[in-house]
Length: 559
Image (cartoon, rainbow, N blue to C red; front, side, top):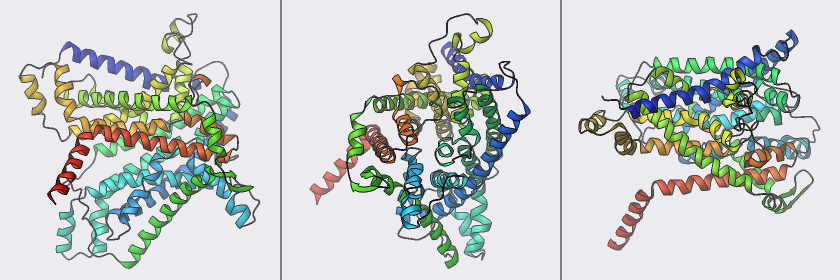
């Protein structure tokens, strides 16, 4: 396969960008935390960081276990139990994916805060509900949906002929589940647990709002920078947060490379268990119902709180919160939409391009490129933000710290551009994963035929491979669009008043104890998110919608 100068130039430029905007900021955190001579580290500093690490484990381990358990129960109930409510469980399990990250915290305060509906008015309690228990509860509510999405995908791909073979050999339905079905799900369950663990560690907003005096590594980083102004401890805490995240990421990659089974793809809705033990059925439905009720309760009370005059004191219907939100400067919402669409397009395209170069071209150091492209998935957003804050405040995009110390500060820090760059670098892995999954099913002769006919690398990629990879691009685009709309950790330390985004405004409103205003803003962000997803879905799949509508009218005329 030929490699043109354009191909080599593209590879070199991409590798440089990956190193510069992904690896360099993380290295900057480590250098600043351990080797910067502004302030010497003390044993007290190390003990404090280790305490934060212990707190993070106290939260992340039970949150991971419970999220995976609820995810398994919801997946099995939605796809394997012959129940009429399966479609409702499928829909409810996806609701948290479009919610802003503070929705659970807002609902928790409304129900269990000092003026909460349950704690004060129903139970008459005056005790504080804040602490690690609330953090675990809210993380389980949000992360269970991720677990459900990943595990249900594995369930739909199980080769049913293996279960039929075991059934024909006389194995009971319970034995089939534990000896055939569950072993085939174990790799996906393990990978899901690792990803959930990473997301729990990276969560800094829930501990900040619900944790009270209980601090985790991620939340303490934000406090050290914005409250104590101690960049040294913040960098050291970031380095401590990096260790378990990288370890989990490496274990995840190792497990993927050691996958020891394969089965025929199956995505049929008719994959129900033939016979289900009554106790198993009741248990699965009970767990699924519990998590579904909590998810619905959370969102229902956000809706109620947005239209309540003063939660905890005056429960009369009111539109005051929406009037206040809409009367403010609307530029944060415009900035959010512009950021989300731009990042979704660029990050998805670059991710697809990296997947194509790694899998089909003779890329220099392909494993290194693959590792760098997927590495941001393991880096907590707040830690990524510290890296950009530490590195790109120096001349020459950070390099000037070592060679041109007296040069003028580079304009990257404090501009809108750095917000776009960090979001693209953070979400580029989504397009890369989607590209890998699609390329596994593409015939390599498609590309070889184009090269044989004399097509250039650029022509082959843009006019031959991209149409074949469009579904991967659409999948990555929708994921990146929704995620960027509600992302905060990576950009909260880099945003200036001139480039605020809606999710930051929601965070500030919630911190200022304006529950009704926060609920109204969360509702607006969720509606904006859903509206954008629907609009782009109609735009991307307009041909299919047109053919469907045309077929429907044709059937009506024929009848």
